[in-house]
Image (cartoon, rainbow, N blue to C red; front, side):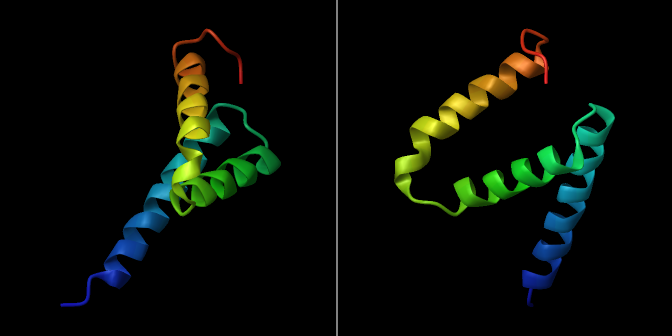
Length: 70
């Protein structure tokens, strides 16, 4: 069974849900596009990205707990 198409649909649904969440949190279209591009780049990049990913995860954590405004 070919699940590649199903994976793409799931990924598309995930992107839509994440985009809706970002819109609700007052991110602009440019900011959302940048975040989605960055995520794609980090997910498909090399192993040299781990330090940057940890930094971005920390920033995400700070925004989530309200210590940093988005």
